[in-house]
Image (cartoon, rainbow over all chains, first blue to last red; front, side, top):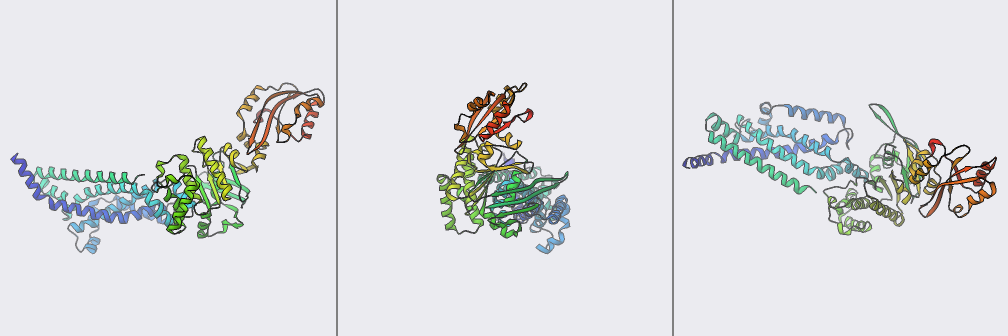
Length: 222
Length: 340
């Protein structure tokens, strides 16, 4: 009993700072990747040959860029974007600096998910809007975005959970966070209690995110 | 008025060029309820989408109130589309907007102000009889109610033409009737020209005053609905009209020797005269009545009679001559063409 108590006290002392770092990195990267990835995904979907804004070459370029970005392992991407990170944040290491590679890694992911959400919409509703004389901009903002929103929310939930996983690697460039805690204390320091405690906290975060994501999805579905 | 002249549409795919529409010529007068009937794949959906250029025709012209819409620039085309409403088999309502917001959609597109939109939406909900469903979402409505919302939406921006693409195909028979009578009502009270695409002959029979039959991308027959129902000429039309009860009778009939099988069509006036009786008396021909029925198309009736004729010498020819003098439409049914 006493032993369990002392473990809890240790974890409560260790946890708050890395927990905050993880939440901060994931939240910021989610916001940036959604802001960048959503328009990218929509443009990729509607620029297809058979869609409302056919632009064959643009579509090809976007697909290529998304595929390249998605095929890079995160750990390599993180190092590859150092110059950009330095330019944007002023430093290459630290929690804030880690937001840059995290956002860059998640943006193409969001773009693909959004693209799929858009493509899954029944063509009939877009055709109906066209038959009423809607232009491309009106169709995007009044039909595609609202109708695809529940599916996009599911995608964002998935993105947040993936980002929690990626953020663990940010520890490698001094990003801190729960992953860093687990590696330094748990793995390298042979403190299994810290390792297990971190895993439990991460599990709880993932569960909570998924639960909230499902709630919002259901509320949006009609 | 809508005039379609020499319209062609071809698609290019891997297997080559597919000619979806070939030399289509149609004139649809203001206030018509014009039916276009065809089997699936006949090109009817492509044809109706050419009218608002959701499909780009390959060649030909489409005149709406004298204006060739093929020559319009994109922005002008968007404006014309607002005057041409369209409804679909799958309703295509926006799932995340309630009824009032769905109906408001084309008005938002056309930049109406909020107050006008509100008034217009209420007006339309009343027109389609859904005042109590104003704040219901599509998922809470039945198929018939969804199509009513779709009709209201299609007419919202003061459309004067309504295109119906298999609008009743997903509905049960009684709901179909109710939607058709709503369309008729709209046509009568608002003078809206309606073009109906369907594969259901009952739909044409119920509401259309004119009809065109399309098969393999070509119009094979067109005319007033009564004319087409009473005297179908093309085999595709006959197949659409084929009456199961008469078909059974045909299997029963056996034409041996000099006996020949005929289908006689009586139009309104001749239906009241004892034509057959008189034919027998004057020509001495033998008549065996196989089957007969009387149909009603929009208040006008016509009858079909299937008879076997046989007789000595010239009596058969005389009988046929007699029937044609009476201005009856007589058709010999032979072998495979025994569709009635």
